[in-house]
Amino acid sequence: MTSLDQTPETRPFLVDLRGVVDLLSRHIYSGPQVYLRELLQNGRDAIAARAELEGRQDPAWGIRVIPPTPGDPAFRFEDDGVGLTADEVGELLATVGRSSKRDLFDLPREGFLGQFGIGLLSSFMIADRIEIRSRSARGGDPVEWVGDAEGTFRVRVLSGAEAELPVGTTVILRPRADDAELTSAATVLDLARRYAGYLPVPILVATGRGDFERIDRRPVFALTGDDRRAVRDDLDVLGRAVVGQTPFDAIELHAPSTATRGTAFVLPYAPAPGARQANRAYLGGMLVSERADELLPDWAFFVRAVVDSSGLRPTASREHLVEDDALEQTRAELGASVRAWVMRLGLEQPARLAEFVAIHHLGLKALAVHDDELASIITRWLTVETSAGTMTIDELVRRHPLVRYTETVDEFRQIAAIAASDRPIVNGGYVHEADLLRRLPLLHEGVRVERVTVSGELDSLDAPPLAERDDAIALESRANAVLADVGCEVAVRSFRPDDLASLYLADADVLRSIARGTAREVAGALWSGVLGRIDQAIADRSGESEAPPQRPKLCLNWASPLVRTLAAATDEAVFDRTVRLLYVQALLGGRRPLRHAERAMLTDALTDLVQLSLAR
Image (cartoon, rainbow, N blue to C red; front, side, top):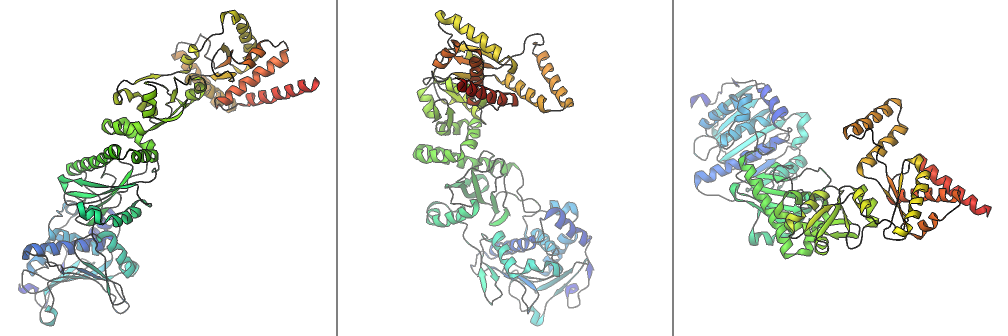
Protein backbone atom coordinates (compact mmCIF):
# COMPACT_ATOMS: atom_id res chain seq x y z
CA MET A 1 0.00 0.00 0.00
CA THR A 2 2.06 2.97 -1.26
CA SER A 3 -0.22 5.50 0.41
CA LEU A 4 0.98 4.24 3.76
CA ASP A 5 4.72 4.67 3.11
CA GLN A 6 7.22 6.98 4.77
CA THR A 7 5.42 10.25 4.04
CA PRO A 8 1.95 9.63 5.49
CA GLU A 9 -0.86 11.96 4.60
CA THR A 10 -2.65 13.71 7.47
CA ARG A 11 -6.35 12.99 7.08
CA PRO A 12 -9.43 14.16 8.98
CA PHE A 13 -11.86 11.91 10.81
CA LEU A 14 -15.21 11.66 9.09
CA VAL A 15 -17.08 12.86 12.18
CA ASP A 16 -16.70 15.56 14.82
CA LEU A 17 -14.20 13.66 16.99
CA ARG A 18 -14.53 15.98 19.97
CA GLY A 19 -18.29 15.59 19.85
CA VAL A 20 -18.01 11.81 19.76
CA VAL A 21 -15.56 11.75 22.68
CA ASP A 22 -17.88 14.05 24.61
CA LEU A 23 -20.74 11.64 23.85
CA LEU A 24 -18.69 8.73 25.20
CA SER A 25 -17.74 10.52 28.39
CA ARG A 26 -21.19 11.94 29.12
CA HIS A 27 -23.64 9.31 27.88
CA ILE A 28 -21.93 5.94 27.47
CA TYR A 29 -19.03 5.57 29.86
CA SER A 30 -19.22 6.30 33.60
CA GLY A 31 -15.86 8.12 33.58
CA PRO A 32 -12.47 8.43 31.90
CA GLN A 33 -11.02 5.59 34.01
CA VAL A 34 -12.65 3.10 31.63
CA TYR A 35 -9.91 3.77 29.09
CA LEU A 36 -7.86 1.04 30.78
CA ARG A 37 -10.75 -1.42 30.84
CA GLU A 38 -11.24 -0.94 27.09
CA LEU A 39 -7.55 -1.44 26.38
CA LEU A 40 -7.47 -4.57 28.55
CA GLN A 41 -10.51 -5.97 26.77
CA ASN A 42 -8.95 -5.22 23.39
CA GLY A 43 -5.72 -6.94 24.41
CA ARG A 44 -7.55 -10.00 25.67
CA ASP A 45 -9.59 -10.21 22.44
CA ALA A 46 -6.43 -9.82 20.34
CA ILE A 47 -4.75 -12.73 22.16
CA ALA A 48 -7.87 -14.87 21.65
CA ALA A 49 -7.84 -13.97 17.95
CA ARG A 50 -4.18 -14.99 17.66
CA ALA A 51 -4.84 -18.32 19.39
CA GLU A 52 -7.65 -18.98 16.92
CA LEU A 53 -5.46 -18.01 13.96
CA GLU A 54 -2.49 -20.16 14.98
CA GLY A 55 -4.50 -22.99 16.47
CA ARG A 56 -2.65 -22.85 19.78
CA GLN A 57 -2.57 -20.87 23.03
CA ASP A 58 0.91 -19.91 24.17
CA PRO A 59 0.86 -19.32 27.95
CA ALA A 60 3.52 -16.67 27.46
CA TRP A 61 1.18 -14.46 25.45
CA GLY A 62 0.00 -11.72 27.73
CA ILE A 63 -0.55 -8.04 28.40
CA ARG A 64 1.92 -5.52 29.86
CA VAL A 65 0.86 -2.15 31.22
CA ILE A 66 3.63 0.40 31.80
CA PRO A 67 2.58 3.62 33.58
CA PRO A 68 4.60 6.83 33.07
CA THR A 69 7.78 7.34 35.07
CA PRO A 70 9.77 10.51 35.82
CA GLY A 71 12.10 9.60 32.97
CA ASP A 72 9.37 8.69 30.48
CA PRO A 73 6.02 10.53 30.59
CA ALA A 74 4.35 8.12 28.15
CA PHE A 75 1.84 5.46 29.16
CA ARG A 76 2.35 2.18 27.28
CA PHE A 77 -0.01 -0.72 26.80
CA GLU A 78 1.39 -3.82 25.09
CA ASP A 79 -0.27 -7.08 24.10
CA ASP A 80 0.94 -10.23 22.35
CA GLY A 81 -2.24 -10.53 20.36
CA VAL A 82 -2.96 -10.99 16.68
CA GLY A 83 -1.90 -7.45 15.74
CA LEU A 84 -3.05 -5.33 12.81
CA THR A 85 -2.06 -5.34 9.13
CA ALA A 86 -2.04 -2.21 7.00
CA ASP A 87 -5.38 -3.25 5.46
CA GLU A 88 -6.89 -3.84 8.90
CA VAL A 89 -5.77 -0.40 10.00
CA GLY A 90 -7.89 0.95 7.17
CA GLU A 91 -10.84 -1.09 8.39
CA LEU A 92 -10.21 0.19 11.91
CA LEU A 93 -10.28 3.76 10.59
CA ALA A 94 -13.58 3.06 8.89
CA THR A 95 -14.98 1.71 12.17
CA VAL A 96 -13.87 4.74 14.14
CA GLY A 97 -14.30 7.38 11.46
CA ARG A 98 -17.84 6.46 10.49
CA SER A 99 -19.23 6.01 14.00
CA SER A 100 -22.15 8.35 14.53
CA LYS A 101 -24.06 8.68 17.80
CA ARG A 102 -26.47 5.98 16.68
CA ASP A 103 -23.65 3.74 15.47
CA LEU A 104 -21.83 3.93 18.80
CA PHE A 105 -24.85 2.57 20.61
CA ASP A 106 -25.58 -0.06 17.96
CA LEU A 107 -22.00 -1.03 17.03
CA PRO A 108 -21.55 -4.83 17.20
CA ARG A 109 -19.19 -5.71 20.02
CA GLU A 110 -18.46 -9.34 19.26
CA GLY A 111 -15.83 -8.63 16.57
CA PHE A 112 -12.26 -7.71 17.50
CA LEU A 113 -12.06 -4.67 15.25
CA GLY A 114 -15.38 -3.22 16.42
CA GLN A 115 -14.27 -3.49 20.01
CA PHE A 116 -10.85 -2.09 19.20
CA GLY A 117 -12.40 0.96 17.60
CA ILE A 118 -14.52 1.79 20.66
CA GLY A 119 -11.55 1.14 22.95
CA LEU A 120 -9.44 3.48 20.86
CA LEU A 121 -11.94 6.31 21.16
CA SER A 122 -12.11 5.91 24.95
CA SER A 123 -8.40 6.73 25.19
CA PHE A 124 -9.13 10.22 23.85
CA MET A 125 -10.84 10.93 27.19
CA ILE A 126 -7.43 11.18 28.88
CA ALA A 127 -5.02 12.03 26.06
CA ASP A 128 -4.87 14.37 23.08
CA ARG A 129 -2.81 11.94 20.99
CA ILE A 130 -2.88 8.17 20.57
CA GLU A 131 -0.06 6.23 18.94
CA ILE A 132 -0.52 2.61 17.89
CA ARG A 133 2.28 0.40 16.59
CA SER A 134 1.38 -3.11 15.53
CA ARG A 135 2.69 -6.19 13.73
CA SER A 136 0.16 -8.76 12.56
CA ALA A 137 0.49 -12.50 13.11
CA ARG A 138 -0.85 -12.81 9.55
CA GLY A 139 2.37 -11.34 8.17
CA GLY A 140 3.24 -8.13 6.39
CA ASP A 141 5.07 -5.01 7.50
CA PRO A 142 4.34 -3.42 10.88
CA VAL A 143 2.22 -0.29 10.82
CA GLU A 144 1.88 2.90 12.88
CA TRP A 145 -1.34 4.84 13.41
CA VAL A 146 -1.32 8.26 15.11
CA GLY A 147 -4.54 10.07 15.95
CA ASP A 148 -4.96 13.60 17.36
CA ALA A 149 -7.87 14.96 19.39
CA GLU A 150 -8.12 17.85 16.91
CA GLY A 151 -9.72 15.35 14.55
CA THR A 152 -6.88 14.17 12.30
CA PHE A 153 -4.88 10.96 11.93
CA ARG A 154 -2.04 9.57 9.85
CA VAL A 155 -0.89 6.06 9.01
CA ARG A 156 2.49 4.77 7.82
CA VAL A 157 4.23 1.45 7.26
CA LEU A 158 7.32 1.03 9.43
CA SER A 159 10.66 0.02 8.01
CA GLY A 160 14.27 -0.27 9.04
CA ALA A 161 15.00 -0.24 12.76
CA GLU A 162 11.42 0.87 13.49
CA ALA A 163 10.14 -2.35 11.97
CA GLU A 164 11.84 -4.50 14.59
CA LEU A 165 8.59 -5.18 16.42
CA PRO A 166 7.24 -8.47 17.79
CA VAL A 167 3.79 -9.70 16.87
CA GLY A 168 1.24 -7.73 18.85
CA THR A 169 0.16 -4.17 19.47
CA THR A 170 1.50 -1.27 21.51
CA VAL A 171 -0.68 1.71 22.45
CA ILE A 172 1.14 4.85 23.61
CA LEU A 173 -0.66 7.68 25.40
CA ARG A 174 0.63 10.93 26.83
CA PRO A 175 -2.07 11.89 29.33
CA ARG A 176 -3.19 15.44 29.83
CA ALA A 177 -2.01 17.05 33.06
CA ASP A 178 -5.42 16.96 34.70
CA ASP A 179 -5.80 13.24 33.87
CA ALA A 180 -2.26 12.18 34.78
CA GLU A 181 -3.41 10.54 38.01
CA LEU A 182 -5.44 8.03 35.99
CA THR A 183 -2.21 6.66 34.52
CA SER A 184 -0.14 6.66 37.72
CA ALA A 185 1.29 3.31 38.82
CA ALA A 186 -0.97 3.04 41.88
CA THR A 187 -4.17 3.92 39.98
CA VAL A 188 -3.36 1.66 37.03
CA LEU A 189 -2.63 -1.26 39.34
CA ASP A 190 -5.91 -0.70 41.20
CA LEU A 191 -7.98 -0.36 38.01
CA ALA A 192 -6.36 -3.38 36.39
CA ARG A 193 -7.12 -5.54 39.43
CA ARG A 194 -10.69 -4.28 39.53
CA TYR A 195 -11.53 -4.69 35.87
CA ALA A 196 -9.31 -7.53 34.68
CA GLY A 197 -8.19 -9.50 37.72
CA TYR A 198 -9.94 -12.61 36.33
CA LEU A 199 -9.02 -12.35 32.63
CA PRO A 200 -7.59 -15.70 31.43
CA VAL A 201 -4.32 -14.17 30.18
CA PRO A 202 -1.17 -13.03 32.02
CA ILE A 203 -1.45 -9.34 32.90
CA LEU A 204 1.69 -7.56 34.14
CA VAL A 205 1.69 -4.02 35.52
CA ALA A 206 4.96 -2.13 35.90
CA THR A 207 5.50 -0.99 39.47
CA GLY A 208 7.89 1.86 38.70
CA ARG A 209 10.64 0.04 40.58
CA GLY A 210 11.99 -1.75 37.56
CA ASP A 211 9.78 -4.83 37.88
CA PHE A 212 6.24 -6.01 37.05
CA GLU A 213 3.40 -7.23 39.26
CA ARG A 214 1.16 -9.94 37.85
CA ILE A 215 -2.47 -9.25 38.70
CA ASP A 216 -4.45 -12.03 36.98
CA ARG A 217 -5.77 -14.80 39.24
CA ARG A 218 -8.05 -17.80 39.11
CA PRO A 219 -11.78 -17.05 39.24
CA VAL A 220 -12.28 -19.13 42.40
CA PHE A 221 -15.94 -18.15 42.51
CA ALA A 222 -16.60 -19.94 39.18
CA LEU A 223 -14.80 -23.22 39.92
CA THR A 224 -16.65 -26.50 40.36
CA GLY A 225 -16.16 -29.92 41.92
CA ASP A 226 -12.77 -30.75 43.41
CA ASP A 227 -11.31 -27.46 42.15
CA ARG A 228 -13.89 -25.58 44.16
CA ARG A 229 -13.31 -27.58 47.33
CA ALA A 230 -9.57 -27.00 47.03
CA VAL A 231 -9.98 -23.20 47.14
CA ARG A 232 -12.43 -23.01 50.03
CA ASP A 233 -10.16 -20.65 51.97
CA ASP A 234 -9.84 -18.36 48.93
CA LEU A 235 -13.62 -18.36 48.60
CA ASP A 236 -13.92 -17.27 52.23
CA VAL A 237 -11.50 -14.40 51.57
CA LEU A 238 -13.52 -13.31 48.54
CA GLY A 239 -16.75 -13.66 50.52
CA ARG A 240 -15.47 -11.36 53.26
CA ALA A 241 -14.52 -8.80 50.63
CA VAL A 242 -17.98 -9.00 49.06
CA VAL A 243 -20.22 -8.93 52.16
CA GLY A 244 -17.90 -7.29 54.70
CA GLN A 245 -17.93 -10.26 57.09
CA THR A 246 -17.43 -14.00 56.97
CA PRO A 247 -20.42 -15.21 54.91
CA PHE A 248 -22.99 -17.50 56.48
CA ASP A 249 -22.45 -19.87 53.56
CA ALA A 250 -21.39 -19.96 49.91
CA ILE A 251 -23.78 -21.32 47.26
CA GLU A 252 -22.51 -22.63 43.93
CA LEU A 253 -24.42 -21.01 41.06
CA HIS A 254 -24.89 -22.37 37.55
CA ALA A 255 -27.01 -21.18 34.64
CA PRO A 256 -26.34 -23.62 31.75
CA SER A 257 -28.34 -21.60 29.21
CA THR A 258 -25.75 -18.80 29.20
CA ALA A 259 -22.70 -20.66 30.54
CA THR A 260 -22.89 -18.59 33.71
CA ARG A 261 -21.11 -19.83 36.82
CA GLY A 262 -20.40 -18.23 40.15
CA THR A 263 -20.98 -18.11 43.88
CA ALA A 264 -23.70 -16.54 46.00
CA PHE A 265 -22.46 -15.53 49.45
CA VAL A 266 -25.19 -15.72 52.10
CA LEU A 267 -25.27 -12.58 54.24
CA PRO A 268 -24.52 -13.22 57.94
CA TYR A 269 -26.72 -10.25 58.83
CA ALA A 270 -30.12 -8.91 57.79
CA PRO A 271 -29.71 -6.30 55.02
CA ALA A 272 -31.25 -2.86 55.43
CA PRO A 273 -34.84 -2.60 54.15
CA GLY A 274 -34.83 -1.71 50.48
CA ALA A 275 -31.10 -2.40 50.08
CA ARG A 276 -30.21 -3.20 46.48
CA GLN A 277 -28.37 -6.37 45.56
CA ALA A 278 -24.71 -5.54 44.95
CA ASN A 279 -23.89 -8.49 42.70
CA ARG A 280 -20.71 -8.59 40.62
CA ALA A 281 -20.97 -9.70 37.00
CA TYR A 282 -18.02 -10.60 34.78
CA LEU A 283 -18.16 -11.45 31.08
CA GLY A 284 -15.28 -13.65 30.01
CA GLY A 285 -13.39 -12.57 33.11
CA MET A 286 -13.85 -8.83 32.53
CA LEU A 287 -15.84 -6.87 35.09
CA VAL A 288 -19.13 -5.51 33.76
CA SER A 289 -20.89 -4.37 36.91
CA GLU A 290 -20.40 -4.36 40.67
CA ARG A 291 -24.09 -3.61 41.26
CA ALA A 292 -25.88 -6.02 38.94
CA ASP A 293 -29.10 -6.13 40.98
CA GLU A 294 -30.94 -7.60 37.98
CA LEU A 295 -28.84 -10.77 38.10
CA LEU A 296 -30.87 -12.58 40.79
CA PRO A 297 -34.59 -12.65 41.63
CA ASP A 298 -35.76 -9.95 44.04
CA TRP A 299 -36.55 -12.57 46.66
CA ALA A 300 -32.87 -13.58 46.87
CA PHE A 301 -32.20 -10.53 49.03
CA PHE A 302 -30.09 -12.54 51.47
CA VAL A 303 -27.20 -13.26 49.09
CA ARG A 304 -24.59 -11.30 47.17
CA ALA A 305 -23.37 -13.04 44.03
CA VAL A 306 -20.19 -13.01 41.96
CA VAL A 307 -20.58 -14.65 38.53
CA ASP A 308 -18.80 -14.98 35.21
CA SER A 309 -20.67 -15.58 31.96
CA SER A 310 -20.02 -16.04 28.28
CA GLY A 311 -23.67 -15.92 27.21
CA LEU A 312 -24.95 -12.64 28.62
CA ARG A 313 -24.67 -9.37 26.69
CA PRO A 314 -23.32 -6.05 27.97
CA THR A 315 -24.83 -2.67 27.15
CA ALA A 316 -22.96 -0.23 24.88
CA SER A 317 -21.07 1.08 27.90
CA ARG A 318 -20.13 -2.45 28.99
CA GLU A 319 -21.08 -1.39 32.52
CA HIS A 320 -24.49 -3.09 32.72
CA LEU A 321 -26.17 -6.21 31.41
CA VAL A 322 -28.74 -6.07 28.63
CA GLU A 323 -32.19 -6.95 29.99
CA ASP A 324 -33.17 -9.60 27.46
CA ASP A 325 -34.48 -13.18 27.35
CA ALA A 326 -31.01 -14.55 28.11
CA LEU A 327 -30.75 -12.51 31.30
CA GLU A 328 -34.28 -13.49 32.33
CA GLN A 329 -33.48 -17.18 31.86
CA THR A 330 -30.20 -16.79 33.73
CA ARG A 331 -31.98 -15.07 36.60
CA ALA A 332 -34.42 -17.96 36.86
CA GLU A 333 -31.66 -20.58 36.79
CA LEU A 334 -29.50 -18.79 39.37
CA GLY A 335 -32.59 -18.36 41.56
CA ALA A 336 -33.19 -22.11 41.31
CA SER A 337 -29.66 -22.70 42.65
CA VAL A 338 -30.36 -20.49 45.67
CA ARG A 339 -33.75 -22.14 46.24
CA ALA A 340 -32.15 -25.60 46.07
CA TRP A 341 -29.63 -24.57 48.74
CA VAL A 342 -32.41 -23.52 51.13
CA MET A 343 -34.32 -26.75 50.58
CA ARG A 344 -31.19 -28.85 50.95
CA LEU A 345 -30.36 -27.06 54.19
CA GLY A 346 -33.82 -27.83 55.53
CA LEU A 347 -33.51 -31.52 54.71
CA GLU A 348 -29.89 -32.10 55.71
CA GLN A 349 -29.07 -29.43 58.32
CA PRO A 350 -32.30 -28.26 60.00
CA ALA A 351 -30.45 -26.60 62.89
CA ARG A 352 -28.39 -24.62 60.40
CA LEU A 353 -31.55 -23.61 58.56
CA ALA A 354 -33.07 -22.41 61.84
CA GLU A 355 -29.99 -20.23 62.36
CA PHE A 356 -30.33 -18.84 58.84
CA VAL A 357 -34.03 -18.11 59.36
CA ALA A 358 -33.31 -16.32 62.65
CA ILE A 359 -31.04 -13.89 60.77
CA HIS A 360 -33.34 -13.20 57.81
CA HIS A 361 -36.77 -13.89 59.31
CA LEU A 362 -38.46 -10.69 58.13
CA GLY A 363 -37.43 -11.03 54.50
CA LEU A 364 -38.10 -14.76 54.53
CA LYS A 365 -41.64 -14.13 55.68
CA ALA A 366 -42.13 -11.97 52.60
CA LEU A 367 -40.64 -14.76 50.51
CA ALA A 368 -42.88 -17.40 52.06
CA VAL A 369 -45.93 -15.34 51.12
CA HIS A 370 -45.09 -15.61 47.41
CA ASP A 371 -43.15 -18.86 46.95
CA ASP A 372 -45.08 -22.02 47.84
CA GLU A 373 -42.15 -24.37 47.28
CA LEU A 374 -39.78 -22.50 49.55
CA ALA A 375 -42.55 -21.69 52.01
CA SER A 376 -43.13 -25.40 52.63
CA ILE A 377 -39.53 -25.66 53.86
CA ILE A 378 -39.02 -22.28 55.50
CA THR A 379 -42.34 -21.64 57.22
CA ARG A 380 -41.93 -24.22 59.95
CA TRP A 381 -38.80 -22.39 61.19
CA LEU A 382 -40.29 -18.90 61.19
CA THR A 383 -41.30 -17.50 64.57
CA VAL A 384 -44.42 -15.60 65.57
CA GLU A 385 -45.45 -13.68 68.67
CA THR A 386 -48.36 -15.26 70.54
CA SER A 387 -50.16 -14.64 73.79
CA ALA A 388 -48.37 -17.75 75.10
CA GLY A 389 -44.94 -16.44 74.09
CA THR A 390 -42.82 -16.53 70.95
CA MET A 391 -42.83 -19.87 69.15
CA THR A 392 -42.07 -21.32 65.74
CA ILE A 393 -44.92 -21.84 63.32
CA ASP A 394 -44.16 -25.56 63.35
CA GLU A 395 -44.61 -25.65 67.13
CA LEU A 396 -47.74 -23.49 66.89
CA VAL A 397 -49.60 -25.68 64.36
CA ARG A 398 -48.62 -28.90 66.12
CA ARG A 399 -50.03 -27.69 69.42
CA HIS A 400 -52.93 -25.64 68.09
CA PRO A 401 -54.34 -26.70 64.68
CA LEU A 402 -56.78 -23.77 64.95
CA VAL A 403 -54.59 -20.68 64.60
CA ARG A 404 -56.28 -17.58 66.01
CA TYR A 405 -54.72 -14.27 65.00
CA THR A 406 -55.31 -10.52 65.13
CA GLU A 407 -54.84 -8.23 62.15
CA THR A 408 -53.20 -5.42 64.13
CA VAL A 409 -50.69 -5.04 66.93
CA ASP A 410 -53.20 -2.89 68.87
CA GLU A 411 -55.80 -5.66 68.85
CA PHE A 412 -53.22 -8.19 70.00
CA ARG A 413 -52.07 -6.00 72.90
CA GLN A 414 -55.62 -5.45 74.07
CA ILE A 415 -56.74 -9.07 74.21
CA ALA A 416 -53.54 -11.11 74.59
CA ALA A 417 -53.78 -10.89 78.36
CA ILE A 418 -57.17 -12.64 78.49
CA ALA A 419 -56.46 -15.35 75.89
CA ALA A 420 -56.72 -18.86 77.32
CA SER A 421 -53.43 -20.76 77.41
CA ASP A 422 -54.94 -23.59 75.35
CA ARG A 423 -56.24 -21.11 72.74
CA PRO A 424 -53.41 -18.60 72.21
CA ILE A 425 -53.71 -15.61 69.93
CA VAL A 426 -51.06 -14.81 67.32
CA ASN A 427 -49.99 -11.24 66.66
CA GLY A 428 -50.59 -10.77 62.94
CA GLY A 429 -49.96 -7.04 62.98
CA TYR A 430 -46.33 -7.10 61.92
CA VAL A 431 -45.20 -6.89 58.27
CA HIS A 432 -46.20 -9.99 56.25
CA GLU A 433 -47.45 -11.76 59.39
CA ALA A 434 -51.18 -11.82 58.66
CA ASP A 435 -50.61 -12.75 54.99
CA LEU A 436 -48.40 -15.64 56.05
CA LEU A 437 -50.85 -16.87 58.69
CA ARG A 438 -53.70 -16.89 56.19
CA ARG A 439 -51.62 -19.19 53.95
CA LEU A 440 -51.00 -21.80 56.65
CA PRO A 441 -53.90 -24.07 55.58
CA LEU A 442 -52.23 -24.34 52.16
CA LEU A 443 -48.88 -25.27 53.68
CA HIS A 444 -49.93 -27.52 56.58
CA GLU A 445 -52.62 -30.17 56.28
CA GLY A 446 -55.36 -29.98 58.89
CA VAL A 447 -54.58 -26.41 59.96
CA ARG A 448 -57.35 -23.80 60.15
CA VAL A 449 -57.02 -20.07 60.77
CA GLU A 450 -59.44 -17.66 62.40
CA ARG A 451 -59.23 -13.91 62.69
CA VAL A 452 -59.87 -12.57 66.18
CA THR A 453 -61.38 -9.12 66.78
CA VAL A 454 -61.71 -7.02 69.90
CA SER A 455 -65.50 -6.93 69.75
CA GLY A 456 -65.65 -10.66 69.14
CA GLU A 457 -63.48 -11.40 72.18
CA LEU A 458 -65.58 -9.05 74.33
CA ASP A 459 -68.73 -10.86 73.28
CA SER A 460 -67.13 -14.19 74.19
CA LEU A 461 -66.37 -13.16 77.77
CA ASP A 462 -68.65 -14.57 80.49
CA ALA A 463 -71.29 -12.39 82.10
CA PRO A 464 -71.44 -12.38 85.94
CA PRO A 465 -73.54 -15.16 87.52
CA LEU A 466 -77.27 -14.54 87.45
CA ALA A 467 -77.46 -14.23 91.26
CA GLU A 468 -74.93 -11.37 91.16
CA ARG A 469 -76.17 -9.74 87.98
CA ASP A 470 -77.89 -6.80 89.77
CA ASP A 471 -74.67 -5.89 91.61
CA ALA A 472 -72.74 -6.03 88.38
CA ILE A 473 -75.26 -3.84 86.56
CA ALA A 474 -75.13 -1.31 89.40
CA LEU A 475 -71.33 -1.26 89.15
CA GLU A 476 -71.54 -0.64 85.41
CA SER A 477 -73.95 2.27 85.91
CA ARG A 478 -71.84 3.96 88.59
CA ALA A 479 -68.57 3.48 86.66
CA ASN A 480 -70.13 4.79 83.41
CA ALA A 481 -71.02 8.00 85.22
CA VAL A 482 -67.42 8.39 86.40
CA LEU A 483 -65.91 7.91 82.93
CA ALA A 484 -68.54 9.85 80.95
CA ASP A 485 -66.17 12.80 80.54
CA VAL A 486 -63.54 10.67 78.75
CA GLY A 487 -66.03 8.99 76.41
CA CYS A 488 -65.47 5.44 77.65
CA GLU A 489 -68.18 2.83 78.29
CA VAL A 490 -67.92 0.30 81.11
CA ALA A 491 -68.81 -3.38 80.83
CA VAL A 492 -68.56 -5.95 83.63
CA ARG A 493 -67.46 -9.46 82.58
CA SER A 494 -65.69 -12.44 84.12
CA PHE A 495 -62.36 -13.60 82.70
CA ARG A 496 -58.96 -14.98 83.65
CA PRO A 497 -56.57 -14.17 85.17
CA ASP A 498 -58.23 -13.01 88.38
CA ASP A 499 -55.49 -10.48 89.15
CA LEU A 500 -56.26 -8.55 85.95
CA ALA A 501 -58.85 -6.10 87.27
CA SER A 502 -59.53 -4.09 84.13
CA LEU A 503 -59.08 -4.28 80.39
CA TYR A 504 -59.23 -1.49 77.80
CA LEU A 505 -60.87 -2.61 74.54
CA ALA A 506 -61.29 -0.61 71.33
CA ASP A 507 -61.48 -1.83 67.74
CA ALA A 508 -59.47 -0.26 64.91
CA ASP A 509 -62.16 2.24 63.85
CA VAL A 510 -62.53 3.48 67.42
CA LEU A 511 -58.77 3.86 67.83
CA ARG A 512 -58.57 5.88 64.62
CA SER A 513 -61.40 8.09 65.80
CA ILE A 514 -59.59 8.64 69.11
CA ALA A 515 -56.41 9.54 67.25
CA ARG A 516 -58.29 12.12 65.16
CA GLY A 517 -59.85 13.50 68.31
CA THR A 518 -56.45 13.88 69.93
CA ALA A 519 -55.19 15.63 66.80
CA ARG A 520 -58.16 18.03 66.91
CA GLU A 521 -57.27 18.99 70.48
CA VAL A 522 -53.79 20.17 69.50
CA ALA A 523 -54.54 21.46 65.98
CA GLY A 524 -55.54 24.95 65.01
CA ALA A 525 -59.06 25.92 64.05
CA LEU A 526 -58.56 25.11 60.36
CA TRP A 527 -57.22 21.56 60.80
CA SER A 528 -59.57 20.88 63.67
CA GLY A 529 -62.47 21.63 61.37
CA VAL A 530 -61.03 19.43 58.63
CA LEU A 531 -60.65 16.48 61.01
CA GLY A 532 -64.17 17.05 62.29
CA ARG A 533 -65.55 16.87 58.76
CA ILE A 534 -63.62 13.62 58.20
CA ASP A 535 -65.31 12.08 61.23
CA GLN A 536 -68.71 13.24 59.98
CA ALA A 537 -68.04 11.87 56.47
CA ILE A 538 -67.08 8.48 57.94
CA ALA A 539 -70.24 8.42 60.02
CA ASP A 540 -72.40 9.37 57.03
CA ARG A 541 -70.80 6.68 54.86
CA SER A 542 -71.38 3.99 57.48
CA GLY A 543 -75.00 5.06 58.02
CA GLU A 544 -74.35 5.93 61.64
CA SER A 545 -74.94 9.68 61.51
CA GLU A 546 -77.99 9.35 63.72
CA ALA A 547 -76.66 6.52 65.89
CA PRO A 548 -74.44 7.12 68.90
CA PRO A 549 -70.76 6.84 67.92
CA GLN A 550 -68.84 3.75 68.94
CA ARG A 551 -66.73 4.24 72.01
CA PRO A 552 -63.91 2.31 73.67
CA LYS A 553 -64.83 0.03 76.56
CA LEU A 554 -63.34 -0.47 79.98
CA CYS A 555 -64.01 -4.08 80.87
CA LEU A 556 -64.04 -4.65 84.65
CA ASN A 557 -63.27 -8.22 85.72
CA TRP A 558 -66.00 -9.54 88.03
CA ALA A 559 -63.68 -12.42 88.96
CA SER A 560 -61.19 -9.93 90.47
CA PRO A 561 -61.39 -9.43 94.26
CA LEU A 562 -60.56 -5.76 93.71
CA VAL A 563 -63.55 -5.24 91.43
CA ARG A 564 -65.90 -7.10 93.81
CA THR A 565 -64.70 -4.90 96.64
CA LEU A 566 -65.17 -1.80 94.50
CA ALA A 567 -68.75 -2.80 93.73
CA ALA A 568 -69.52 -2.76 97.46
CA ALA A 569 -67.84 0.62 98.12
CA THR A 570 -70.16 3.25 99.55
CA ASP A 571 -67.66 6.12 99.67
CA GLU A 572 -68.24 7.86 96.36
CA ALA A 573 -64.88 9.65 96.46
CA VAL A 574 -63.01 6.38 96.87
CA PHE A 575 -65.17 4.74 94.20
CA ASP A 576 -64.61 7.61 91.76
CA ARG A 577 -60.84 7.67 92.17
CA THR A 578 -60.49 3.89 92.03
CA VAL A 579 -62.46 3.64 88.76
CA ARG A 580 -60.27 6.35 87.26
CA LEU A 581 -57.13 4.53 88.37
CA LEU A 582 -58.40 1.27 86.89
CA TYR A 583 -59.09 3.10 83.63
CA VAL A 584 -55.57 4.53 83.44
CA GLN A 585 -54.08 1.17 84.47
CA ALA A 586 -55.96 -0.51 81.62
CA LEU A 587 -54.70 2.08 79.15
CA LEU A 588 -51.11 1.49 80.24
CA GLY A 589 -51.61 -2.28 80.17
CA GLY A 590 -52.75 -2.00 76.57
CA ARG A 591 -49.76 0.25 75.77
CA ARG A 592 -52.03 3.13 74.87
CA PRO A 593 -50.54 6.63 75.10
CA LEU A 594 -52.08 8.85 77.77
CA ARG A 595 -53.70 12.07 76.66
CA HIS A 596 -53.43 15.23 78.72
CA ALA A 597 -56.83 14.65 80.36
CA GLU A 598 -55.86 11.10 81.31
CA ARG A 599 -52.54 12.16 82.81
CA ALA A 600 -54.37 14.75 84.86
CA MET A 601 -56.90 12.09 85.90
CA LEU A 602 -54.10 9.86 87.17
CA THR A 603 -52.48 12.67 89.13
CA ASP A 604 -55.78 13.82 90.68
CA ALA A 605 -56.80 10.31 91.65
CA LEU A 606 -53.52 9.54 93.34
CA THR A 607 -53.55 12.90 95.14
CA ASP A 608 -57.09 12.36 96.45
CA LEU A 609 -56.33 8.83 97.62
CA VAL A 610 -53.28 10.05 99.51
CA GLN A 611 -55.32 12.80 101.12
CA LEU A 612 -58.07 10.34 102.06
CA SER A 613 -55.52 8.04 103.65
CA LEU A 614 -53.97 10.90 105.64
CA ALA A 615 -57.36 12.10 106.83
CA ARG A 616 -57.91 8.74 108.49
